[in-house]
Image (cartoon, rainbow, N blue to C red; front, side, top):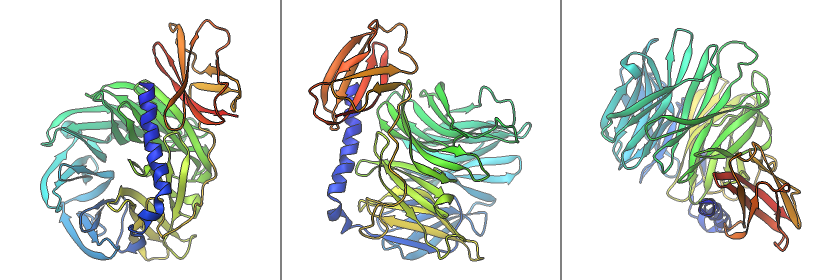
Length: 504
């Protein structure tokens, strides 16, 4: 299992490296543009059809409408189709997914302070409406829609939260539907130690082969309690929504929401920002990790500390790899995008803006899609605080995130070495021998551990079994060529983790 898992990860990484070599051939066929067009609003989703790019966003104005703004493949605006929903309409944070031969569009409908419902629209490939669903937990409580996901062949999962006004409690919320939009199950989740106002909000979902799911979210607090700082939430559930394990991701001063993407059949990657310095606009650092059915395997921070950097989208493709990004006040009110490899290193990072005044204009990219020409398309809104209001913002790049041909790497510093939550090596770099230590310790019932060393192509180059009763948990690495490797450790109870090993 370990070899297969690492080989699968490195296959994804090698595809990304292959793309770096072949980029000149793909750039010639990839379009580039960075455009704004009025009007705009927050929570914009973007899709690509055979003939156009389409931004789906809430009304501005009217506030009761869903707007579908069409642009041709060169970035020229062509038309807007609008749907009147009859009440205040808010597009979901992660509110679009492919579904059969069309799309599912998620939103929240506000009827009054106590009546807030999920609204789901099934569009066909021509963006004609086929079916709609309006739903609220217990048919009476305030239910906010945040993300929608289709997992073939027959499961749709919606994440979000529902609120209880008494005590201002927020419950993380999951709703599973079949492909006819009938309810399969629904669950709510709340922190076990919630002593004040606040609770869970769920932002993202990834599936695994056991039929279960990884859930990414955030724990929020209301009030001024010194312990009430936001935290990230990572949850593993089974196929019926029953909780398997949960982790609250903290930092020196807290953590933002967590987004998730499938890595392989049993693992998911997560992307977020850690809060290092408190402030009304906190200083943050990118954070990436990997978790499997037993817990977190990899947890690493990346680059320098930047004021108010938020994680707004996180996607994966076989040709480009993991791509995450969002808004960053500390980068001049711009948006950022980072391409991250499966062990937590940044391949490239870009910043985007489309204004005349960095101190006055705000640029918020909120969603993305991988495009048919091998590039990427990012959408959001651009806010001119001089009085010109909000504009739709659409950025089309090649596979390296360049919105103009041949751009160069800018932005975040070189990463810190990825750190694993439960295994350390010393010395590292090593020459003849390396010692292992574990935190938490190896399960007491385990009698031996097996250590495997793989090269960067995922090939096993060394394997050694160590008896637990040995005082010295060390392995022989003599004879290995200089370079970087991946070290995995297993007990007879399962995988203990993996980390980088460097041979001098």
